[in-house]
Image 1 (cartoon, rainbow, N blue to C red):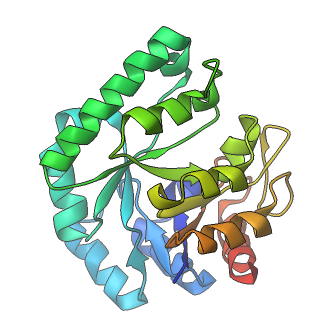
Image 2: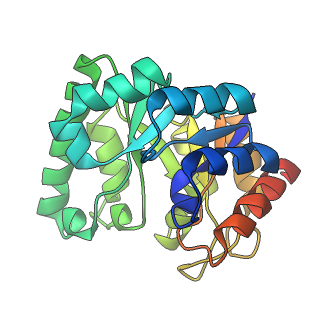
Amino acid sequence: MTRTAINLYTVRDLDEPLLDVLDRIADAGYDGVQFAGFGEPTVAEVLDKLEETGLTPVSGAHVGLEDLQRNLEETRATFQERLGCDSAVLSYLDESYFADSETTDETISMVHRLSEKVEDSGWRLHYHNHDQEFVDLGDETGLDRLLRVATDVGLELDVGWALTGGEDPVTLLERYDDRIEMVHMKDMADGEFCEIGEGNVDMQACADTARDVGATWLIYEHDQPSDPAASLYHGAAYLNDL
């Protein structure tokens, strides 16, 4: 069954305590929440709120590169052992990691080694794309090469960034069907962020294909909402309509 969630990055500028934000997320009608850190509340308080609201943590928590490299055991203990997130999602590598073919190959080797380290710890690594990973390497893109070399890494496909990078997100969903558990349902219009349903991404086709390939989570994300609270509710309604 495919369920809906929101990534907390979408509401990072909402001037409310996280526990109140979780109330909003449940009230909006999402099935779950994808953590990307959680600030001041203790893990115990977050767990109590999840039980109270019925929200489920998305299977993959967004984690930065530094935490995976330097604080892996502490990070894994928080998200896997206590919150039940069975994987980490490497959330972002900036453009410098994909500046040219040589740099991209070095980045891919680094991600491959990192995935092995994460797996040795008892966790699994997924990769969340932006548009820089679609650098042209001649016979394949940077993302294609990364997934070819780092065979244990899952893909959390961001459909908006994929389209901005010049790729068809539906084709990528089909190509990497067995590597995808989570899909970021982000809409974009000519490379600019927008509310879901107002951009260039065929969101219905992405949702249908995600279900067909067995993805378990459709996750709403908007990088720069002008009104985070309104965007939170709009995203839930839109995903539920899909």
